[in-house]
Amino acid sequence: GENVEQHPSTLSVQEGDSAVIKCTYSDSASNYFPWYKQELGKRPQLIIDIRSNVGEKKDQRIAVTLNKTAKHFSLHITETQPEDSAVYFCAASSGGSNYKLTFGKGTLLTVNP
Amino acid sequence: GAVVSQHPSRVICKSGTSVKIECRSLDFQATTMFWYRQFPKQSLMLMATSNEGSKATYEQGVEKDKFLINHASLTLSTLTVTSAHPEDSSFYICSAPRGGAEYFGAGTRLSVL
Image (tube, each protein chain N blue to C red):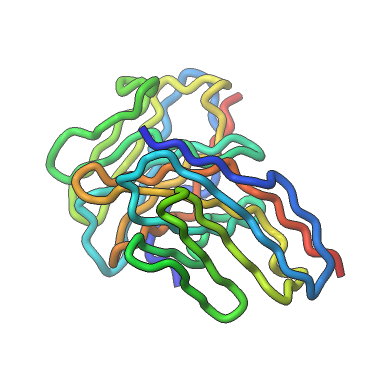
């Protein structure tokens, strides 16, 4: 089955700096890669996703890049703000009839004012 | 706003009792829903895929007789934790796919005394 590795497990940045979280996946059939933000005790919120037919996607301060050859994808947050502090999860899925998300272990991002 | 509703948000029960958790898709039909379990400071682990009108598909290591899933309609899936014990205490979250993405319920924190 799919295996998703996520790094780093914790990340601390100063407000205004950029944050980068990286994930690798094992199943070359995976074609959908969402990123979720989860605040303590809350539901995971989809913040951005990318499909295998594109290499990069951007939404304001958030961007995701995908390298299918290397089987890794990354989340980039620019101009970080204290409210960006949360746990971020990457995930991968192969879609189709066997669709299911496999999650990385998460990254605790702390943005210091 | 939320597209997936989950109830209850918190349950405290005695050991040996059964607990039912509901997951509803709001304003859309979901022939498939997913049930996850999340331990403190850990990632989301898929327990089972709920299929409307047919049996649920359980992940390896998940006891189907312990975690009963019923997907009786296109907008409702239920997870029943039978004869709950303290080790079943956890955060249970459901999700449903919509428009190619997966959206999560608010989660249910189960505490078994």
